[in-house]
Image (cartoon, rainbow, N blue to C red; front, side, top):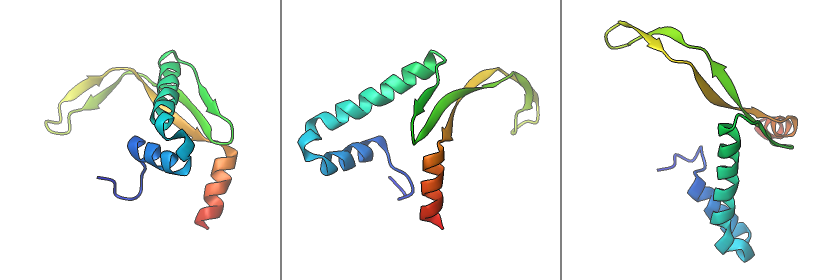
Length: 100
């Protein structure tokens, strides 16, 4: 259930279908296609930039020694890549104006 502070993929599709009724039957396909293309680009190690919105990229996290919070035992945490979003200037400015 949505707490009102986020928009799920299905809610985004519904809102777009209401806003653009002439595209209602293609809205779900379009949203899924865009998101799938973004995921595939990130999997290939590419950066995804949407002008005026922001960019998606990968941050590398090297392996490290961590602790199991339950037992306190040391465990090796493997290296990994983490998806990262950086908001664009236009988005940052617009959010700042709306929240002040």
